[in-house]
Image (cartoon, rainbow, N blue to C red):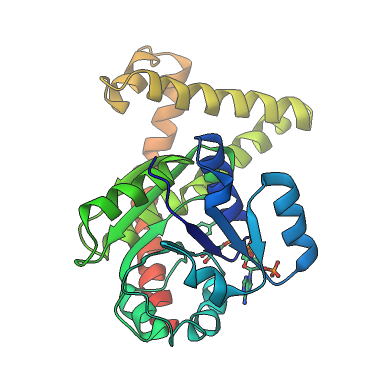
Length: 272
Ligand SMILES: NC(=O)c1ccc[n+]([C@@H]2O[C@H](COP(=O)([O-])OP(=O)(O)OC[C@H]3O[C@@H](n4cnc5c(N)ncnc54)[C@H](OP(=O)(O)O)[C@@H]3O)[C@@H](O)[C@H]2O)c1
């Protein structure tokens, strides 16, 4: 991966997962700066990762080629206000904040920047993330490649051509780990009702989910429906369980849930 001077503005969970992934992919710690408000937390980051840290956001932005805005959405306006007097024209700005449009970020920064919006998800914390990326029209191919490589350090990436596509990424990947947790919770609950203790019920569900996901990854040439059909014998137990899901329109429930996520993302964009 190309080495550039990167500053993370805000060094919480998501920023940490990204720079940890970058470091394990060979990125030089000397090229990474992370900012925060708490000197003790920052010293821990330096001790743990060998990166530069500072409480001075403006100095971090000034010395960076790439600025990653990684504070909580509600903190973004206050943080960006300090950058309004800086010339950001030669920098790539990457925002990982949920629900803040490119237009709004440009307003907050007081200038039109070369901006990539990234929507990561929580499995990025364990290197199994799925990030959606959107670049504004003024971002170069080289900067797009750099942004993609950056997020590929914590999982898979998917570019969207329109900014509204980021909200579809939220529905299909950003919020999606919670859908699977909910499904697993429901299965664990029923396994307990059928006589297993909590830990065993969790193990059964966890391994089934992990195994199914690994099979999907290992067989890219097979449709998901084919994988399902391959483990469903006619008249068997699996067929009976799937018939029950279908009778209750699982597919319809999933569609409605994903549409609700998009709608909420659109509403949230209007609030910030
Ligand atoms: N976590 C996810 O799964 C996820 C998924 C998609 C997108 N995102 C986005 O990622 C961003 C960060 O989320 P997160 O989960 O990493 O949050 P987080 O753990 O709370 O991290 C935010 C960090 O920003 C720091 N901060 C707050 N104000 C600051 C300031 N004025 N200057 C410098 N640093 C400041 C906080 O420091 P203190 O410790 O001092 O408060 C904290 O370390 C959010 O915009 C979120 O929308 C997260």
